[in-house]
View 1 (cartoon, protein in one colour):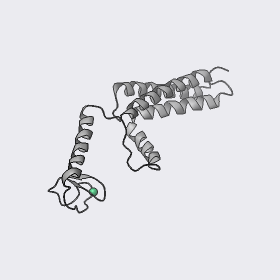
View 2: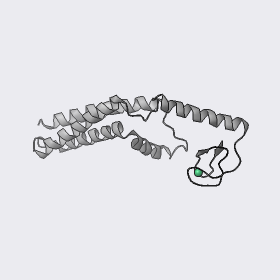
View 3: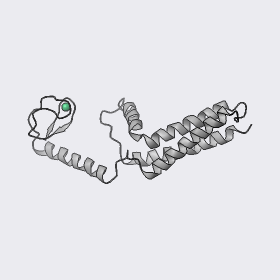
View 4: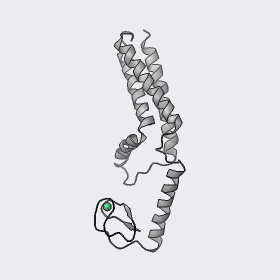
Length: 158
Ligand SMILES: [Zn+2]
């Protein structure tokens, strides 16, 4: 296996130029290093096939995502029709933002991970979503939805 110096893509031994960025490739990796990479690649592929990819959208994510969008829509409609009690603007805005954030986390996890990766890049160069990230994501989705619904519901009361 050859690893591109420029973009770190994996390439087959017989390739002379990187499949991803076209950079000229050096000699194939040998011995232990090649084996280690081979293993790493296998684990990654297996995780994708097993559906263990922490960024996969599960039916749970989908349902919570739709509910979050419904909460956002309800909050928006309540506000537009003047049903939000006076002095509760911060509450309704919080509810809408929380619902929207939760919906993004549910429905476009890859985008959210890119953002997280950007934040992590301040501390590390090798950010990979760990298995616990999937659980963390689901907890966050649930908390966002719950907080969003509570904020929106409370905003109609004085
Ligand atoms: Zn490359």
